Length: 366
Image (tube, rainbow, N blue to C red; front, side, top):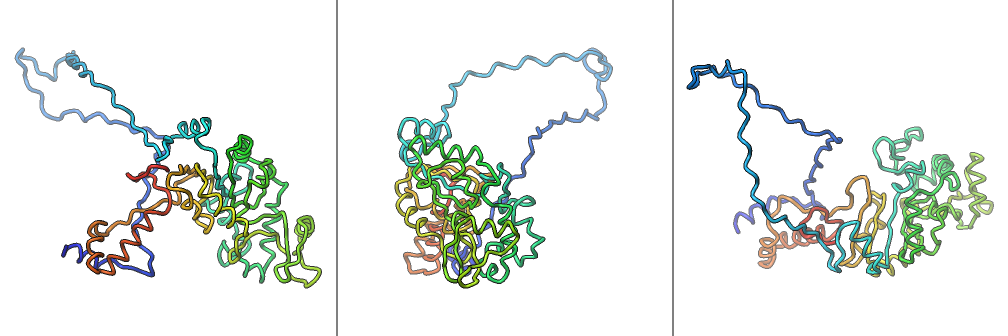
């Protein structure tokens, strides 16, 4: 164990945050097929064969002998992983489980990606995302557009942005209609959405099935005195290029969109606590899973619940920490009183327990 202890002593710990080495994704080939190159012709001088002719003088090549037929073998049996509750980890298997009634409490988590096809940009896609196109507002950082303290000082940028995002300017996408279909089939438990575009309601998803985790434009209030205002008032002011003001205290009036620095709605906390333990299929659609506490919902479902991510790239993955001793060796060190080993063991187990487990040997549900 001396080498393990030496290795352990070299591990740096900074405020409980691991500095795990990230795996760089393989380069995408963009559909190009690999080209095979023929071996270069031999540069060795020709030599004479038994007939007295030089091989270099031959005009006809003898065809190669036919290859021996392959020995027939028994076809390999395809093994498909199944979740602990017996649902195959394929789209076909999940769809069949829904049709057979084995899945009946579906929770859908949605982000800005599902509204891109409606013409609304998402937030974080390089080049086209909302955060990459806010230079004209001269913000200290892109996230300040939705920062409550920045809004108190300078509400104009948000009001200009809201004018282009207001409900009624866009139509629901096929993804919104799919969620409505789940509701019509009586298998949608809840749709938790980060989106503020209200396209869920445009798609006729029942309002009681939708939780706007980050609020929306359907209500508004003064951030100073709390007086409520109709969405029509805010819309009229914003489209007149004005900053909505409270008639009582002259405070700023904003739609009930949750900004950074504000609490999420109580309904989000109440229904997520009720729904996630009941969930038997979690669909995560078009979200980067970078904003908490919303992103943490993926870990609130039962360990037997199948989880499917639909996104441009894998996100929210559990990460195996590299450069550390084996867990069993850490357990042995921790049992002997090594507090550093005990802390690292807890950190590894916590890291491995959170997020999706794509590509991991112990993945039985993602």
